[in-house]
Length: 494
Image (tube, rainbow, N blue to C red; front, side):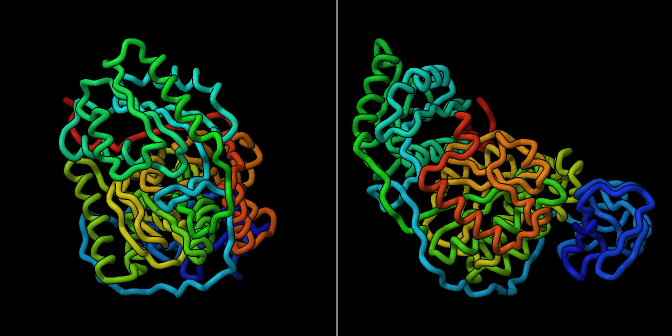
């Protein structure tokens, strides 16, 4: 295996594919250099001298500029590299995207719903409207495990700390997310569990649900019954009975909506896992399916790539608003816009937000951007969508589920055990992680470097894995019973 990877011919840094000792002599793309210090795996090494204030180029784009003169063979990282990014910008539209080629239609085994969507799971959910009833919801989840089987695949409760003492858009976000999850296609039945005196009570959540399938939803206000456990279990048994006869049937892959997310990234994420996910996204879009890219702050520095792939000028303007509105959100809270890479990101070799963003956006492949969604907005148009949500793993993944994603693909170089309300497929950027954390990782994109597999080959394998998951194959987090819900908190608490 090669020791260094130069991602594009324009790059003046390369990525160490394994840890390199100081004084190692290496040849990459016909260029021979000697490392001036130890280079950790996933980190960058200068291919040529870079003068102070000179551009550091990776993925064919600047990822920052040199704080000082950087000699050939030097470790290029936070100690000698700084961001070039600033506040809100003016953008120009330069449309560039390839046409999507038709492919042989694929199918999966799913659960068709009345509204035309398809579930990849048939689960019974307990959804609290307010944090005050979280413990009741968790106790009901435990008690209701007796209902699993014969059409009921799982019983899950989704506690959260919100639903009261909120105002304005912040409160509206909570109501929208809860209503969207209550009508999610992966739900065969849902109990909306309220207290009775909260701001976002049961009746308000029901209003936000719109035209829902009343056979699949029950509501309970715990203050209005003598024994909330007895009343809730009666409703859960009723919902489970309605689900008993439901069976999976063949469904076209065009019915799939897949969320795209990364977290705990490393220097390999942008050259293995994220491009493999991007290849998958293009394959699914070619099937007529839908993918959703989110974590807007991690688009900063690569946003023009997405803007130029917008199908129309109107979509370009929506993407500009998406980016600048999120920058404004940072500024309104007196926070630095571009201090994004986490300690884990930096330890893995990611130095600046441009570095992270250019790797992150690889997950979107090359398909045109078809729509831009506000936080909490449901998918309406098939193809690649952009969704407004922060980079936080739990919040962004929940937002993807609330927008209609039946599965979330989550690439990681560091590893994480969490799961959102829908099956959360963990895709390792490197083989050591996949080998070490077999209870967390579902798919090893590190094979792109270690096993000699090609990007198209691995993307097709990921497509096959997603179809199997959509057909009922449990992912690691499901096998362990992991599931989380996190709502974007943007306002004051009363």
